[in-house]
Length: 229
Image (cartoon, rainbow, N blue to C red; front, side):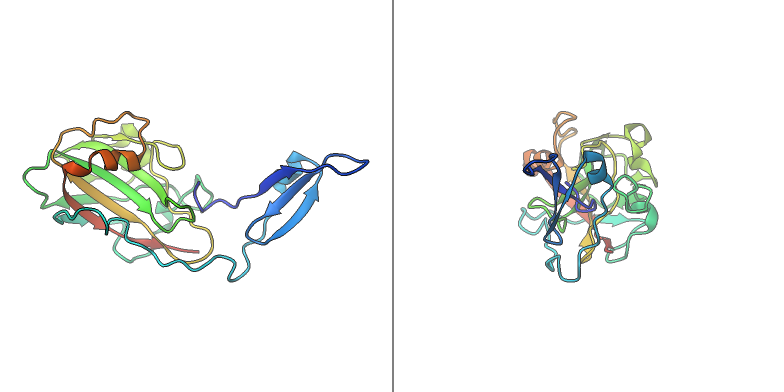
């Protein structure tokens, strides 16, 4: 579940001698209200969390505890380390006013033993125990060293490789859409492997894929843009 969406937890409660309303719990605000229909619950508006309602989080480096791997060069005309995402790289699917347009990427200087790449984007600051995978493309051949702007829309727009499902359940790029609060950090990573294929099914998660191929990693390149509201 991505942190961009405002969530309403709904549970049925019985009211003596009357209809069966819905109890709507607003976790960010600690308040409750009873409404009488599912339709009204869908349209019931949740205010933005009050100041301080979201605990400040210190961003972690999700790659710090992995076995080290040689760095190589990753560049982009669209995103940069420490720079704020532009609107097109934010999410429309999750209502953040963006376009879900994957950034232009180009990489070089990877080890000679490289046979394929994984291209991914991960947010460790998402308010879940496991962060949020926004994008994962696997089985990119070693002779492909660039993704044009918007390549992550579908498999048909990729120059090579195939998408795995992101944490939104879609096989495509999903842009930034954090909840109000601290800035989130989006780790765009190209992982070089010494095998031509990850050998995982199309339904595999990015986490499982990287776990199963940990011993095949020969290099890693990274750009970490930011976004917050």
